[in-house]
Amino acid sequence: MPYPMPSPGGATVTVFASPGSWIESSALEQCRQVAALDGMLHVAGMPDLHPGKGAPIGGAMLSTVLYPHLVGSDIGCGIAVYPFGLRKVVPERLARKFPNLDAEADPSEYNAEELAGYTDGFGTVGRGNHFVELARIGDILEPVHAERLGIAADDLVLIVHSGSRGLGERILRSHTEVHGAGPAADPGAYLAAHDAAVRWGSLNRRMIAERVADALGAQLGAALVDECHNLVVENDGEYLHRKGAARGDGRDVLIAGTRGTRSYLVAGHAGADANYSVAHGAGRKMSRADALKRGLAKHTVEELRRTPLGSHVVCGDRQLLFEEAPTAYKRIEQVIGDLVDHDLATPICTTVPLVTYKTPHTRDGREKRR
Image 1 (cartoon, rainbow, N blue to C red):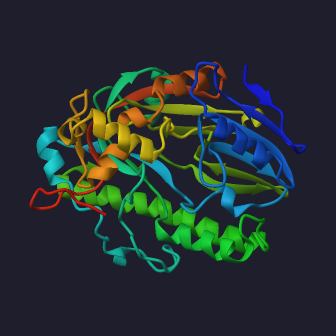
Image 2 (cartoon, rainbow, N blue to C red):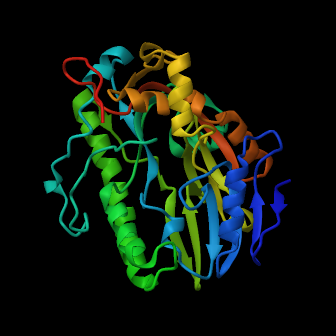
């Protein structure tokens, strides 16, 4: 069963993780701190829960007060999955053909209203845990749902994890410069800007997918899944904030593993006790600094660019390569197992990475540095 936690305020806190799951005490403390905020009703921690800046990542937080910092700066960040038609798949060759997704795309096919008048960074992936991945469908775990989605084992898909880039950061900064971590002074105005950033993030994921399909000569289908995991939804005067938690109210969600492990496509059916939410990924178990330090002592760059699954990693930023090493994350199987055990989601299938893109290689082959 999920276990409740005491909190200093009137809100309840429930973490949906088993005793064997890796949950840092600092992440639990952040849940308690959020629960003490004015107007907070319920905090639900997902099995990928880990500490973040000002609020836990992997949390769904219900309140009568709107707090922009509980969504964070990357408003609308999410994961989309697209059917991807290729005749011949040679991962090593395809890795060399990926476009430079640090360079902005031409936004001319979208009107200014669709992009909220913001074009900086459009069509780019960004840093951190963002990625683009060519994968194949692995094991079919729930045939009825797989048939509903029209997928079968060995089908190719393109997975895109990115968000609203600088737009979301600009929206949050305009709030924090005046109000800090306090509530939104004008919830309606914040929600209008927020909703535009959510739409921007979805358009950005589609543009990234189109750029990759053009470069690889592939046919791109309509998104099977496009769910963001940094957002807030208002309903009858209550605000459900999600930071690193996906909507699990009857939706299909891709829960990302790492570049060296499988990911899982699930059908979410979470209820009110989980704030209608599911996990968004494996969740970090090491800080970036620790991952870099341990990785440098344990791995070579060449080892991290070829995974145990035989997939290839495109990343010209040496530091990022170590910070995002698979060992820096929790076991995805544990996260999925917790979701199943707590009746929050049903696994549909796995996806197996073939090429994972983080940043482009430089032309002369040297490492790209910040």
